[in-house]
Structure formats: C-alpha cells, structure tokens
Image (cartoon, rainbow, N blue to C red):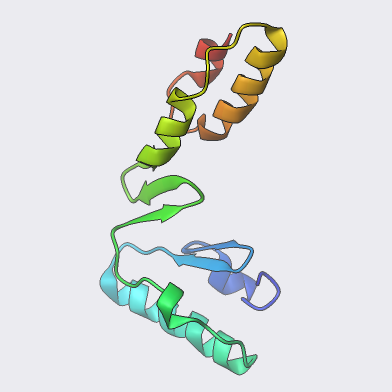
Length: 117
C-alpha cells in the first residue's frame, strides 16, 4: 500500500498499515479532498476496495486494539479485560511475560515504564 500512495499524500493526514488506510483531517472539506486523492490513486492502479470494510466520516475509530480520536488514544474495553483477566504473575518468567503482553498498550498509560519497574 505504501508503494501505491504517493509520499505527498501520505505526509500528514494518512496512516497506512498493511492494507488499511486511515485518513485524518481538521475539516470536512480537507477530509473529502484527501479521500478523493486516495480513491483516484486506487482507481489509477486498478486496485479494489471493499465498501463493506470502509467507514467514512467518523470522529473516532477502532484500529489495532486502540480507540483513536483527535483528542485521545484509548484501549478497547475487551483488550483491557484481557489484561485484567491474566493471572497474577508468580515468578520472574511470568512477570516478564505479563509485562511484554501489557506493554503493547503502554502509550495511553501515563508513566507505564515507572509502574512496570
């Protein structure tokens, strides 16, 4: 996907992860402009898009286990439950495993590194 979308489109406003494209903007007009550019490029290379998998005009979305909006980055509730349901580590190996598992969600957790010590 990164090879299809030109650099000028992907700088500021597009997040590309494998075959997913997230288009971000500060205004609806800019959103539509970026969407048109992406769709034009997709059509140019004869790429197919599944409309069933598309979401348009949302202020918040779920991506890679996170809830992303203009104001915050959060963790999906079912992912929080998975961390909370893990058994309490009983030894160093289990603790290292737990920290590795939970560190995927470290970004929205203030002072995660300090808490993990």
